Amino acid sequence: MRAHGKVLPEHARGHNRSLVLQTLFHEGTMSRADLSRGTGLTRVTISDLVAELISDGFVLEKGVRESSGGPGKPAILVDLARDEHQIIGMDLSGSSPFTGAVLNLDGEVLVRREVPEPASGDADAALALVIRLARELVAAATRPVLGVGVGSPGVVGADGGVLTAPNYGWADVPLRDVLSAELGLPVVVANDANAAVLAECTLGAAEGDCMLVKIGLGVGAGLIIGGEPVIGRHFAAGEIGHVTVGTDGGPPCVCGRDGCLEAWVAVPGLRRRISDSGDRDTVLRDAGERLGIALAPIVGALDLPEVTLSGPRDLLEGPFADSALETLRHRTLAQFHDGVRVRMTEHGSDIVLRGAAVMVLSERLGVS
Ligand SMILES: [Zn+2]
Image (tube, rainbow, N blue to C red):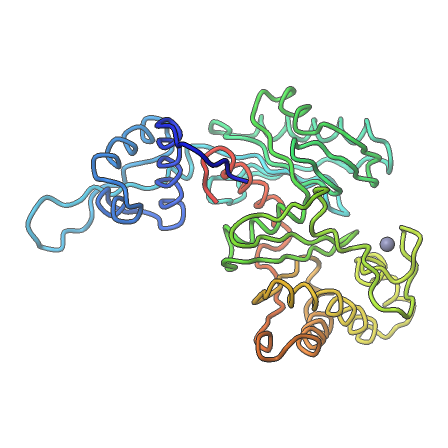
């Protein structure tokens, strides 16, 4: 929550600096006069801030605008210096190895690295591998590193500590502080689905309120409502994987109960049931229906225009998503939700890496 009270001049300056960076990030190249109009700041303030941002290496002059034949000298254009700093993004959520990337400020992947995933449950070995990957990425960067963003499975606290990530045997691992001490760089850690929804909302097609459901080894969701990430009382907002769907049982879940959303739609179980039954369409349609049942009250309560899915396209596109959408429409009020959409993210498997970069942009530059 934002602190209220008197705004000190130094805070106002930081806020205005972020406003300039935010405007350039989303709108691209423009003149100082355009920036003044776009931000509502005076020309003098803009000149001053742009000079400071150029000297810090965050803004570049990009030549002059093609003359429109009018009077006066042509305007000098400025833009965010998208390639002068780099960001390290790490994705610890996959069923594959730990992956990481060096990205530019646009969230474009420049270099990739991976390390093998640790033996299940060996907490120290997992942490050592994360540190090794982070070091390799920092070494691979070719520009000053703005910071390191990490998308981790499990529940992540406000201080960037992983409260629990059972796959790696992590309980109360102060991941942000450990990495920051090892690397000497600012580090931001968030749950993988919360990182992913930031990529969708900031770098993607989604606008305003966003919900992203990430389907992999487990199932989690990230939510941004009114432009603010939803975190929750126990930092567990979006943890919909162990919500029971229906009253008719269902596949057994790792948590000990039957019919959790995760038991219906997580990737390993889906692939196993397809292979066991041989009836791919029915398995996928049944799983999609369960997702639709779980999503309907969320869409109804929050009045969401769409839900984005992230996960293997070969499973989620087609019968699965179609069935989820039909169920969702059938179970919500047509007057409001007949136009609701269920679509795949366009970020593919880089979504957590790109979301991790957005976390750093937001933390360091105030861009979101
Ligand atoms: Zn469960």
